[in-house]
Length: 328
Length: 274
Image 1: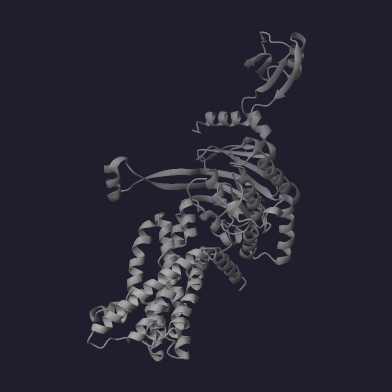
Image 2: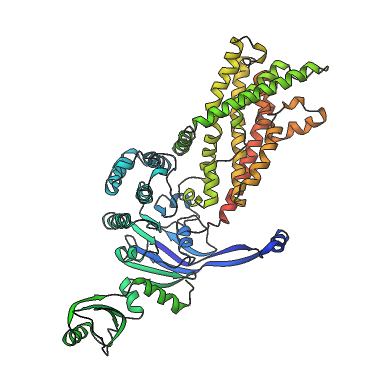
């Protein structure tokens, strides 16, 4: 039995529409028109304990709606969802004890209080036994290197510091599942690395199930074994990064550095760009194997260096949306 | 009963936050001293020209005014800025991922809002009006001690229910906010009602007789008029119980309505963005 079961989950929102202009505003006073938005139009997936799943899609695809239903905040319009045997929106209070949540754009810390007081408040709210709190908080504070920040009021923290504190705050009650909604949004490169490292450690060493939404494809590549792509309220793809790559145009990339600029031409490859002696090439591995292509090139051209690259994941996703006619 | 601990922690955290604004509390204290003095002067003039016997003595009214100035912050005249912001910015999400009842969670915050700044202002106010003024020989301006020790105890019971009533009504304002998102309209209209009908401006017995049946029924009198008149002896201790029951009943009604409305709004919740 999977830890998280989601079956044909649907969520419709009623959005009040207003015609533009003064007359439109006035008529809206008397007669409201509503438009129905299908944020989720039948979503299915299962997640086992200890998985680290990337949940990606463009803005408005339904990512956050899914996370909010899974964490018991929103009630779906139809469908089934069970997490560790509980229905999130019905057994909300019991369910939220098993989960930790971080919404990257907002903080769960108390703005005017020092960080440590927010942690202690969460200890009281979750009724974490003192001994358990001592060990788990000390450990988390060490991993995230928060000790110098503990007495600073949250409003004085930088975004990167705040996110590290938020991550620790979401884990004090030792949840078995962690939902991260855009945890790296707006962070600098160093903070992003710290967050990724932390999430990885958490997943490997504590076997915490992590569901991560992000627009940062480096997050996905660095962290996720499994990627669920959502668009237009439906699941477009569910599998490993390799299987996602294989499913789409199986093009590979080569970055070729030559000893001197020459007019490069080869029947098996497509030239994407050429800047002096550096060339970006694309080829289809089902037409010619990588090994024989490299051999051909090395024999015919003055090669200084060759890099084989996978196409950036953004391009894969864009292809997937195009194929499913989703407006990104 | 471990659950209570969580709510106590919330109250105390909010307390600590609100107590950071000591300068505001001092400014508020000074304003209220002047307002109190002006009100008392108006009542001096009123009692000097009035030929009929009034339902409250001047000394009772003076004490009533000072109590009002000391406990002004307890009136449901504003909302919790944090809750307002949470609702406007959609951070309600974080409130809902806690293993707490949302109504009780916000009620705890509201108790802190209604009491934190009030305690900070009421202590110097009581000292000024109750100790400094009589010592300075201005006994007719002073806050008198309560009618009796029993009256004081009954006053404390009634004051507790006034606080509960004030919090239940503030909660109703918070819940309306979940429906309307912007709190401006409510925030402007409600204080006018609560301040007049609670008896904060003029003690309710001084209103015209034909208004009395309405004034006696409406909920806001439980905020100010009931506890203060018990303190001053204008309501004798023996007659106080129906008025306290009145406070309790309106508190229960506001809490029940607020809970029902919050529950309903949560099932239709739309959390924007993110």
